[in-house]
Image (cartoon, rainbow, N blue to C red; front, side):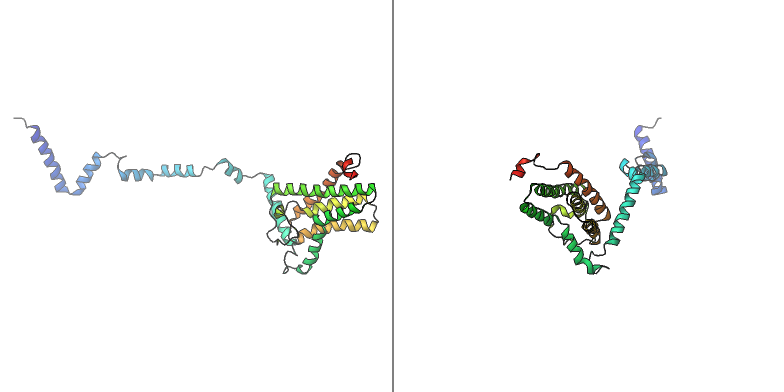
Length: 270
């Protein structure tokens, strides 16, 4: 006589329960694990995520750098040279800033350096040029003085444009107590005093008849004005050096755009 299906299922159920009862939770958990796929088990997923292959792949994916970072890690020779020169410039400028504060090594000479600073400022030069233009009684003198005024205004415009484009901050040891500053004067490159000193000295040497001692003093004044900017901590050395070069070239531009009665008759008719 064949056993019924109910009897067979009951027998299997009884054997499973007896196996569970006789062997405890160990047999039951092993039975469950045997029925549960390896990939669906939480412990299996944890072990798979902690496998060496997975860890190696994750580390490799994390170590992949974007192209910009790779370029930064492998700078060019020109980039390294530029950064090195910039670091030397900052270091030397700080070493020569001996009048930046009263407690510095040359702090007692700070008032004299500030007087030299005023002598190279644009406002006294423009005011003096306007006065000379008002007092000039000959057409030749008016032509020279008018072009000097044009050169001073051109210098202010060009220096302001370059400062606004470069936006290099002034040295950290500078104290902002300068005479008659404007918004763009918070930037340091190039030195406006250096450009003005170089341009004015070249202009006067070429258009005024001066004695040799006066010519020497004029050139010394231009050099001292530029060097005082570094001593006061106003500018870095490269700011002054580029300012001298820019002022020298500005005079050539003024000569090219020279204002004369034939080119601008309306100005001279006033």
